[in-house]
Amino acid sequence: MHQQSARPVREGVTVQRGTGRDPLRRCGLPNLGDMDNRSEVRAFLSSRRAKISPEQAGIAAHGSRRVAGLRRGEVAALAGVSVEYYTRLERGSLAGASDGVLDALARALQLDDTETAHLRHLARAAGAGPGRARTGAPEIRPAIRQVLDSMAGVPAVLRTHRFDILAANPLGRALYAPLFHSAARPVNSVRFAFLDPHAQAFYPDWQKIARESVGALRLAAAANPYDQQLMSLIGELSMHSEPFRGWWAAQDVHVHRHGVKRFRHPAIGLLELAHEALELPGDDTPLTIVTYTAVPGTPSGDGLELLATWAAADESHQRAIQQG
Image 1 (cartoon, one colour):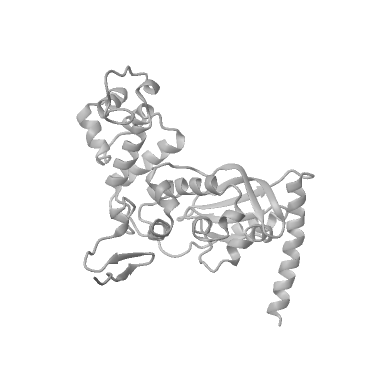
Image 2: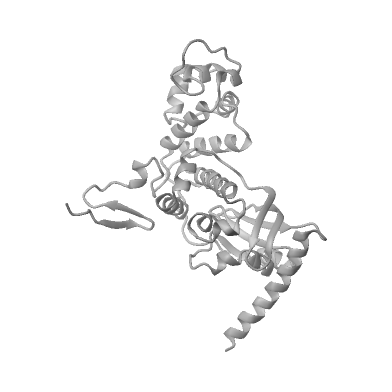
C-alpha cells in the first residue's frame, strides 16, 4: 500500500490527502484558525473540576466515585447555581455569564488569580463577535527603544505576548545570543525552547521554563483569540513537540511577572538572574520589557560584567566583518 502524501494547507500544519481534516483537531489541539472557544471552555472547566477532591472542597464523599475530582452537581452547589446551568457552562456556553457567576465558579473550583483571569478571557471571547485578525509585527515607538538603550547595565528585551523578541539592548542580545544566532525567525523564546537542539543546554531548568511557557501561551491565546500568528505558533509547536502537546492538554495557565531564571551561556557559563516583566499599556499588540539583574559581587553579578565585555568584543568583531 502506498503511503499517503501530505500537502501543506497553512504554515506549520498539514492534512492527509483525502481526509481534509486538521490533525491538531484530532489530537484535541487548537486549530490554526480562531480558537474554538466552546472546546477551550469545556476542557478548562472539566480539567479544573477534576483537580479538586471532595475533601479539598469540604464535601463528604460517600460510596465509589466514577469521576476524578468533583461531580458537576457538586460544583453547581458550591457555586450556587443549578446543575443544568453549570452543565451548560461546562459544555462551552459561557457567553452571557455574569461577573458574579464567574466569581462563584472561581471560588467553587478554587482557581488562583491567573486561572480566574483565564476564565474571564474565555468568557469575554465567548460573548464577542468576530474579531479583527492581527497581522505583522507591531511598530516599536522610538521612546521604547530609548528606554531599552538606557538600561545599559542590565540585559533587557522587548517581547510580544507570543514571545517574539522584537528588540533588545546590547546586553539583552548578548544574553540571548543562542536565540539570535538561530536561523528561525522571528526570534521567539518559546519556539527556541521546544524546537532548538541547544535549548536544554541553555536552560538548566528547561522543564520548568518550557512548561511555564506553555501556560503563558494558553493564557495569551484566550486573551487574543483572533491572533493568527499566535495560533500558527501553537500549531507549529503542537505538531513538532511531544512535550508541548502533553503540557498543552493539561490546560494549565501561567503568567510571567517576576522570578529567578538560570541560563548556561555558551561563553560565560552559569548565570542566575532575577527577571521583571514590565508591561506596556496602550499598544494594539501587548508588549513587555523584560529585564535581568544580579546582585553585584555574586558569581552571577560578575558574570554579567563579563557578559558586557564579551558583548562589546562581539559587536566590534561583527562591525569589522561588515566593513570588510
